[in-house]
Image (cartoon, rainbow, N blue to C red; front, top):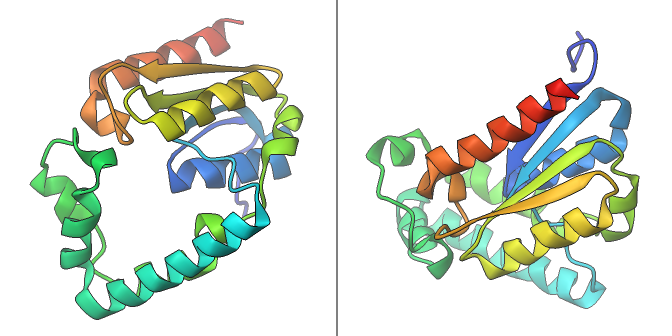
Amino acid sequence: MQSFPEGPVALGGYSYGARVALHVALRYPERVGQLIVLSASRGIENPIERAARVRRDEELAAHIEHVGVEVFLDEWLSQPMFAQLPADPLERAARSDDALGLARSLRSSGTGTQAFLGPQMKNLRMRTLAVAGGEDAKFSAEALLIAELAPRASAHLIDGAGHAAHLEKPVECANVIAHFLSSASAS
């Protein structure tokens, strides 16, 4: 079974998915024609901070196992980074209710478990768009750094949006991505 379609693809991801997309694009650059990352992180550079993140993720994983996904989601979504996120019962219902699976995911692939990708950004040769909510200072800075470090990258900050810009400002976010993709096919 083939894991990629024939020819280069447009690959995108949000938050954790954006980090995965960065790893895929760096590992299989010939398979990725355009890369779109929303609220992406290059990882944690400092090994001490990375180890601390692994410890925090372990504590969070244990907490999720103890309180369950519903309580965890209430706590998680009450963070300032999600303050502008509109309440959407359908989005919430689509979330997994598998506390053990979510905890396992944090332990095995949380930000602290991943290599820092900063030095590898120069190897992203495909057209890349880094999008972040303008109100999300951490990920806005990451988007600007990705655009600065990757040779064919640009950044777009969505005004008035936080971490989940695609849910907070869906039309603007979709327009930015559509413009990026259409300009790629025109060139």
